[in-house]
Image (cartoon, rainbow, N blue to C red):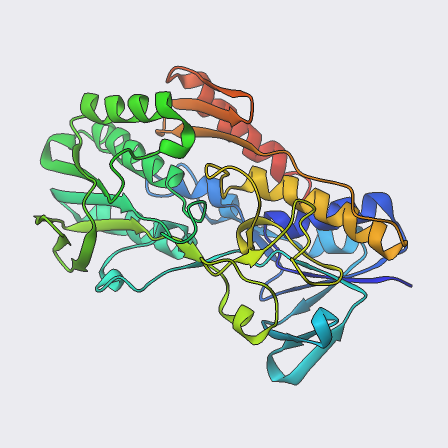
Length: 376
């Protein structure tokens, strides 16, 4: 029996499971992750306002694994042996395989001095709950929201959610009747924030910030974050609550492998999602550095597309065929503001930008419900 191991239970890992099982009902699938749950990141933006809570974010996967006939191992990966044919786990556990799909996500670069003084929203539910709880205690003040990237890996960044927290908190404070007591500040080293979304999107986002009286600090390198302020290379500004999204790099355990890495620390993959120089080792989602345009996003939709290609190629290689499935490069997102949303898409041959409207807000919520049905 063919044995395929998947590392990670995020979007890419679960899509790989579905794709493998759809094409082969007999292959043995083993999935390794610290918990049998999916953290649905897109809904984190609604936690501070109370529009979403734990049941909307944390999706138990035991029933899904049972339906898909997946053997789930609750453990953490610390390295690989035998050219990827053996996965090393904590407590000296070893899992062998005939093929490996790595979908363990990225790791935030937390080297900025004082980054512990900021909340990283995409760290998970606990982070956004801190935002919610601190907002309730604040009578007013300065809220600073920003992001940076990995200078050696242009695609390894997540700016989209920070626009959503920015606009979402503005909407929330207006609804609570206390927006006039707060200053909202947006900061990033980029001169044109959101440029990967397209030139028109940058203009739309900056226009939205101006309309909402949001202060901007753009194009200045961030030197450090202190308890009550953000310091850049050209100055500083006070902040009572700081939300910050650093750039991403590869998992720590990648250091305990011989897998080819990109300059930015991710696993270097070819157009078939196979790690360069490795035999039957694939990568999908935030763990990988893929060929394509610099605007290729790190988002759930892209991870799904890569995971599908990786899973199909895995089965073909095990059957003695050549890898032939590639993935479509496509950016699709709704920048949500708690009551409205801006739809943005970008493809190799163009894109689309729709006006800020309530329909997009409800579309995003409906999509989340529809997407998660398969795992509940």
